[in-house]
Length: 147
Ligand SMILES: [Zn+2]
View 1 (cartoon, rainbow, N blue to C red):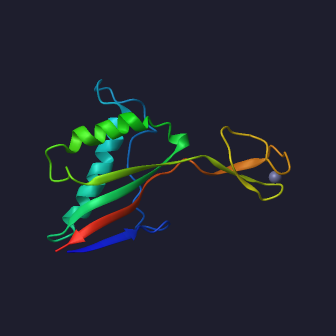
View 2: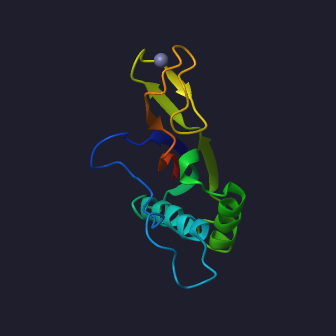
């Protein structure tokens, strides 16, 4: 058995952003929360990957979740567990990787962890900064085992 871990490309068409409907109005079906929808999308991504493996299997995957997505990680984790319980993906180790919001200061170029929009730069106190991380929802890596 050979284990292969590969980070997915950060840019370009091959980037595997988890597709979810978070930007749309709440689903009308009632009990399906946003976290359940996202868990479904993550599992679909893992399944797509597994389908390309010809005998191999997905053993581990990491999902990067930005603070700005406002996802309840405990609820997402629970949804992931229950959705894949008893399926072929039951044993996949899914790592949720929370990412804090990071801003880039336009004045001095400092990158800093920010908890709200317009938070002053810790270096020069300028409120003029731009969000550069914290809104991601994407697969960071997938580790597969090949026969
Ligand atoms: Zn600054």
